[in-house]
Length: 238
Image 1 (tube, rainbow, N blue to C red):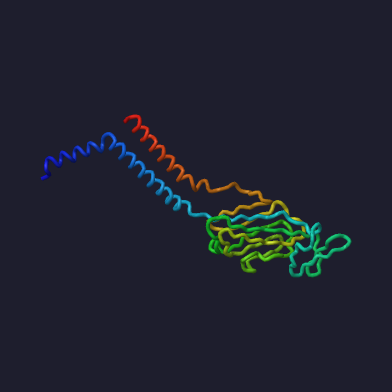
Image 2: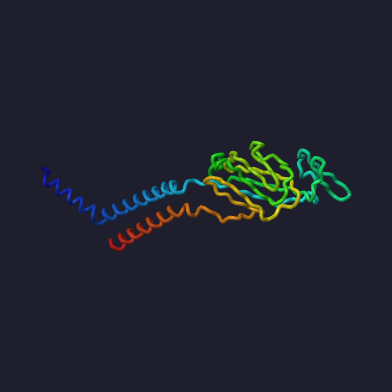
């Protein structure tokens, strides 16, 4: 059996912890531990409910008319030549003149936190960009990607599945017959990847990601409110 003096000591210690400064300190400690555990739980809940998303920005720069510019813009593309005559600049490809020639630059920029791999291309379907005017040729290399990755047909540019590393930007220059229309369309089937389209540097979509931070924001706000009430109770009631 326990000694009566020991029981008396434990009872007194329990009373001290549940009353006065000991109780207030224990309450603050538990509240702080609850805050930490809530934030940690909210973080892992966010990771489970909202996995890290990738973001690809498709930007189409303002087209440049070759009839009002130096033919050197062509960059020595195979089969394409600029001829200066009395009437200005004439552009031809394989000996065939190109009416109303333009150079259009399309940029693909990975601005997310993770690389976009071929696995993100659902059923290996390409990204297609319809610029609404005839594409004569792809002028410049598409960057550190395989040549077969970039393909042009009719008015459509296709970017087939390939690795786009984090912060990587791929530049594609196109020679077109006619000025591209402002209503170009981008079609993609990327998994877990947000695709934004910029025309002339203006983002066509509002910034996203707020919904991913709401669980943590609500958890922190609720816990901070609880701790504030406890502290106020301790200060005013003590």
